[in-house]
Length: 421
Image 1 (cartoon, helix red, strand yellow):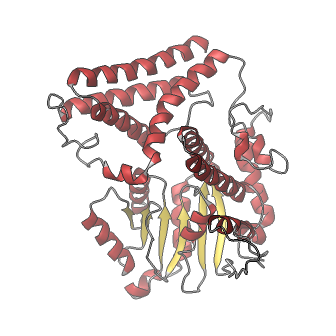
Image 2: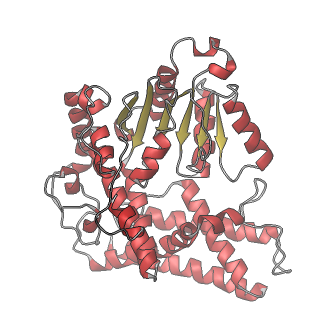
Image 3: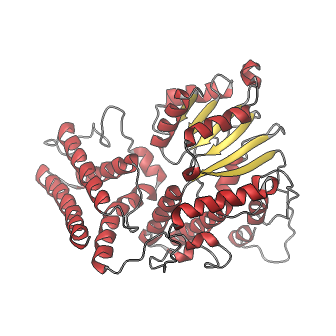
């Protein structure tokens, strides 16, 4: 509310009219991926539970359905494939899919032929389907407003629905890493303020997941709403002891030796209020080490990779423009900017970059300066490296030299890491 007043430059006195954001038909909970034996099986069971018994017997237009939000396009593809193998028909939905196929998937979901969609956050804008029985987030949302909007697509018919986050330390740290790099790379004051607001909101989402506080209360507090009468409409209020045990188990996985560390990577500002009252801030996000050379080498590797991630995440509109086709590994394979450079050559350099990045990540695997990246993240990073080299150079010699310089920089960082281990 304060942001609205500031942006509209409204001066007191201002009459404020509020509608409660509390929706008692939505049950919110959080599950920690690291504590599950099989997260995919758990998600499948959750979906069936939310859809209810004999849901398939209902008329197609009245059947319950669900949405699973994923952070990346590859995540949508992978999750839909795994859930379908487990018996839950799930279709991917993201901007990398051809418009015709994407529209067909959306229509199938709307009319009840497709029960579940695994989608990026762009899905759902302008869509109002009353019978959504669950909304699951396979990765924690970056903002409270985004999560409230996305989870709010469930239960619009007023009937009970479930909203769940599958939370993991890896997802949390990856998002923090990328947001912090975005903040450091932006030069304008307005841009830095925008990213800063996102970081602040993500901090709230971390507290939402890692603290035993009423889920509805945290959402209401973010929007300046009164304390809701939750009672039994979230896991914390329904089974507080079980939730506390789950949080304790999640934290114990990473605390290990219970040695507290000194924060030295400027991430402390991401957790409002310091360590007081927030036990998760004692987690070892980075293991303290006496070797400055190892830190410098790891930081160099992180910078090489994260700079490309910052560019890729800087503008969603720009990234949508350069979509890789399913038949090739590189961005814009049909572009003939450098006639001597064929698609085959570009793919060979792409494969080489993937190999080099994996070797470097492996070499600093035990160092917390190195981000925890999935195979799809590594391939996307290599793809961006290759595309920037191809798009910015005027001939084959400059293109090759740029690739060589990139691999050389990665190898130099790796040598430093191996020397100090």
